[in-house]
Image (tube, rainbow, N blue to C red; front, side):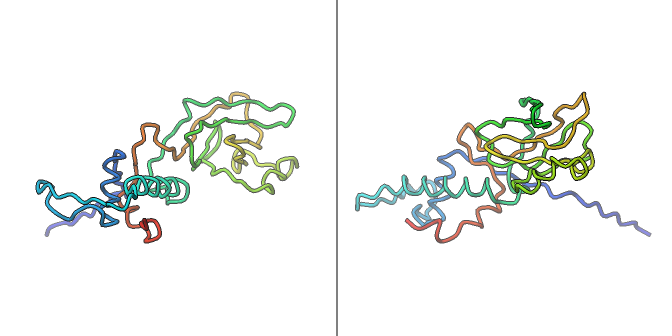
Length: 196
């Protein structure tokens, strides 16, 4: 009797890595500005009404991409751990710690320091910070409090003496100008994004 074994594989995102020129070609195909002819046919499309179609497409696709980096599901984007390049600063007067983030960071998806059980997503709400001044409500190792203000992470939970940065997972804007995302995001482009 044959035995059937089912192996479940985790969802692995297949990220596209497109240069600006490759992304522009994709965008032009979606806006029907790219001829739907074989690549070797030499067909070209031009506008004679003095509109820079490529310039408009480039601006719209960049705005769309930055919006995706800020709001799209994390599983559809490239997530990087930048903990090795960061420093933990002690703010003695506030009994807190801070971590300054680079400009390229668009979104922080997880922070974990030494002794924490799991990564924490930073909160932007002020009420979380208000709890940190109360020793009974203050977060600890099992429920740390981290807030994000002005590109700085504020750790509002007491840390052990040998505390260090274990993980800071972020979504970053690629410094080389590439467009990196799961192909599924192309389906999120709306007709409003495509209008010229």
